[in-house]
Length: 147
Image (cartoon, rainbow, N blue to C red):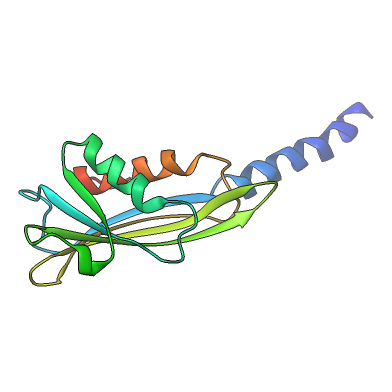
């Protein structure tokens, strides 16, 4: 009798683990024949819809790797910029704002050709601070390694 009472609870726990197990994904992609090797100066294009200062967070993450990173609109981009970083973000509210999507693209400043992309998406907010997610994505972008 007790075995049958435990079985539904066990199935419920197993189902929860399966459903919640794949809630977040990180992807990185480098364009064929392209690399960030040799790039030292980045310019992060300010996204006017960004209310969470992700441009500053991206700059700090790149600077932590020893790169020069500046932010602003394209008209403020220094002439010696080697790579332009753009980003798209989406947030969800769950008793506070939580990052649920972030895509970062890096393109060559002279040719505007895409060099690399990295993205994060979560079907359920992770409740992880956005700077932690940004640092993780920048680490993947700089290292060129797949998650």
